[in-house]
Length: 288
Image (cartoon, rainbow, N blue to C red):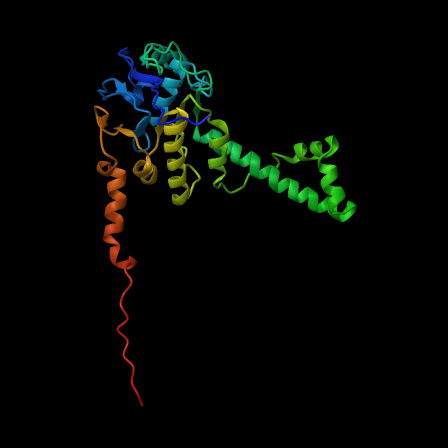
């Protein structure tokens, strides 16, 4: 059901752990060392911005662990000492939930809430595309034997489905595309909290803009709260969001136009501005 300007903040604040250890090179302490963040205070859409290695994904995963969200990712247990340190750090963080429409404190995050990673999106894209390509290939081969209609009918049967299943992951190289938009649309439900890790991965600039516009709509009309890790200038420029700059020591709140990555794009295209201008024709013609 579509809502009118529904702005419910499910996760109101999140405070990182004050826990200290002697070896600060252990994950996740090594990612967060030399930082002095205050409490994160969330809007209906909040962006965690930063360059590679800034800790965007780590912070989302810490939140997902503390809130026990679907999709939370365990740190690698094969790395000696990593797993218990990560779990201890996440559990020693603190958070505060928001209020419902009646002003009463929410007792838990909505059950459909989830942490969606970029790797998850790419994996789903690959499955969808592989199945489509393999179905077309098998259908083509069967068509020569059975005729097109009979081939399609066969693929609808249990035996035909098994043929697709046997070959579904036999190839690895498939291009990514705007399937991301549909995957996110299918997996996001109303009245929930979603942590998104670089959802723009694999999308063209045009589709990044479309995605950002859809997220704005879902937040406004479906009561969905988003916390998004991204450094895409297109997402940053379109999303109606509060932005935390994780490249700063205190995780400063900034406007999108102040961010280093965005400024780089601006300066780059400004420097190339003349190449985008249409030069007036200065041709001269001789009349014989």
